Amino acid sequence: MTLDVPTLRKDFPVLSREVHDARRLVYLDSAASSQTPTPVLEAMDHYYRWSRSNVHRGVYRLAEEATDLYEGGRTKLATFVDADPRGVVFTKNATEAMNLVAYSWVRRHLGPGDAVLTTMMEHHANHVPLLYAARDVGFEVRHVPLTDDGRLDLEAARSLVADGRVKFLAMVHVSNVLGTRNDVAAMTALVRDANEQAVVLVDGTQAVPQMPVSFRELDVDFYALTGHKMCGPTGIGALVARPERLEAMDPFLTGGEMIRDVTIESVTWNDVPAKFEAGTPMIAEAAGLGAAVDYLTGVGMERIRAHETELAQVFIDRLGELDGVTVHGPKDATQRGGAISFAIDGVHPHDVGAMLDSKGVCVRVGHHCAKPLMKELGVVATARASLYLYNDVDDLEPLVEGIEAARSFFRR
Image (cartoon, rainbow, N blue to C red; front, top):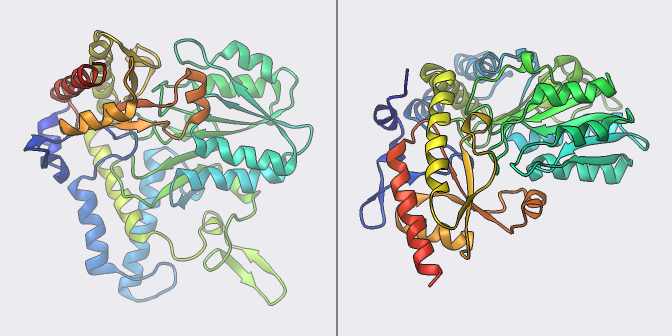
């Protein structure tokens, strides 16, 4: 069953806006941050109006309500990604989640003589923490190259793990630049065939909003996600992990609430996941994230995935027909997500973005926090249109109109 996009759009107040001489707002930047539906806004408003108090530390009615909202958000998110709630650590975003793994797992368990395998399509959030950890503890970082159509080169990956020294794999599920949907199971099997003890971290920030994800079926150790790309609030994300991995890690941050006992000389940690949630947490944001999960579940992740696949193919085909326009990444929409990066010959992406903005079209321009990938592609930046459940084919024509205007104006 296809999505009723006109009806869905009514759930997102900002999409009713007009900009620049009463032009309809066309939002094509959901890979950076999706829009927020009314039920999520209402969930956070309800907390602040009626249940505002702290969690886990009061026995009065408001404190119990706040705790229920916070832990309810955790349980809903765990169900959404098919994981154990004890393995869901709330963080402020996916970047913090991946830093947590780099600091609390990688630095503790890897050293000289070990190797980490990652890819050329990683976001800085998955790339930089590993660089810092390698500098400090001395392991080697290896990168899986890309094929000409923007996929991981699995043959090259096989040769990179052949010596059995790779103890940690860090990879993105869906690329925020190329849109490539990576085969996590194949990469995990490839690494563990060479070293059965290898631990796997997946950056799921672009995957969880777009398609059904089962942490259990992926059979990985860590999975990072963020709320603001899945119709939830900013300021909250999560590290989804095997609880036993969390038990074997030291806290990333210390302070209140993550303590079981403390004396003037020593301290012992709380159970997971509280062990990793020091201080007053993001209570309203957890309530909002829970509402976002309810919203996406109500729409149906299979339907969202099918809608985005169909729409992405229409966009890719149409952009590919335009003279001088190059689309990066796989051209088959079944092999990718809804982020579509493109370039116009002779026109800087920032000029493209400015022209599109004048038409009411919101796209992302820049290096997308993936500078190594930009270098691999031989560009300094790209323009990126990214789709979500509230986009439809009627968003394509303003995009094409803006591209043609940019091409005409800046190539004179």
